[in-house]
Length: 207
Image (cartoon, rainbow, N blue to C red; front, side, top):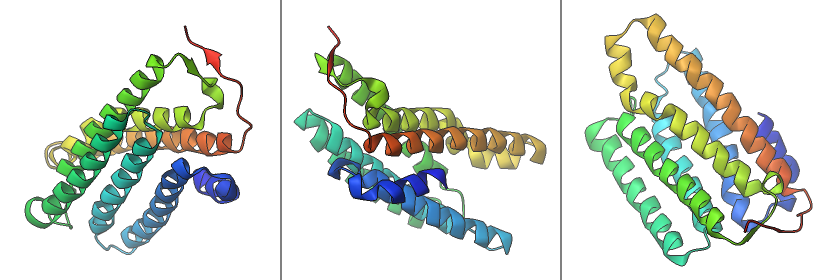
C-alpha cells in the first residue's frame, strides 16, 4: 500500500514519463486486493494474474520507451511490448488457460524486463553526465524492476513444476521468499515515487 499512497500523494507532480509507473502501481494494488478477496472465498484468482501480467509489462515497457535516450531502443521497446501482449494473450487462450498459472508468460516477462533494466543501466553508464543516482527516480524504478524480476524468474518459470513435484512446505518456502522480494520491490518503487517530488540536483560528471 505504501507505493500506492505515495503515488496518490505525488500524482500532480509526476512527469509524463512516470505516468506508467503510477498506472502500474494503482492497477497492481486493485488487482491484488480483488485477487485476495477471490482467494478468501475459494474462487480461482488466476484470471486476475493473467490480466495483471499484460498490464504490468505494458506499463513497464512504456516506462522504458519513455526513459531510453536511444531512439532505436525506444522503438524496439514498443515492438516488444506489443509482441509480449500478443504472446500473453495467445498463451492464455491456447496454452495455459486463464484458470492455471501462466508460467510461460510470467517467465518471458521476467526475462524481457531484466534485459530492459540492464540496457538502461548500460545506456546510463555511456552518458558523460548524469544526475546523482540517489536523487534520480528512474534509477530507483529500474533497480526495483531488476531486483524483483531477476529474483523471481526461476519461480515464475517453474511454479507449476514446484507445486506438482515438491511438498507443500517446500512450495510455501519459495513463495515466502517471493513475498520478501515483493516487499523490497514495492519499497524501492515507493522511494522512486517519493523522489519524483524532490528537486533535481546538478549533474555530476562520470568521466
